[in-house]
Image 1: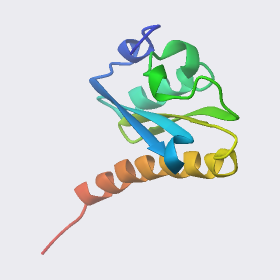
Image 2: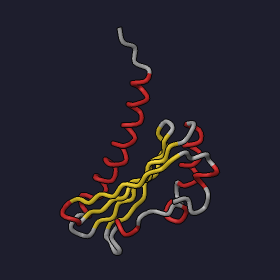
Image 3: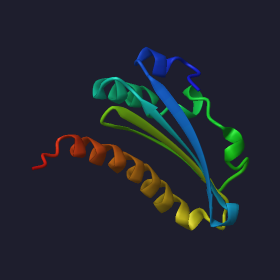
Length: 124
């Protein structure tokens, strides 16, 4: 998964790839979630991959369309995790693709932020 050693250089502890399809297969997505020992490690890795994830991360390309009308990669650091979301869509799903992509990336990020908040919860 770490074609150029970016994750190893930033102490990545583990990673997982998930594949999704939507709208009858007209939209396909791959999401990679990586865990780091610190938030600064996650942020540094995300910065290094911001515009180069397509070249520096080996991901399951068979889970994306070979040709597509919409194709983008989002990266982001969330607490001690980095999320990379790749979405491709053919012309029939293109109108929905960007909104779907943003929601998918945001949803995973919020999950890590909310998990962090629950660690601080005080109960009586």
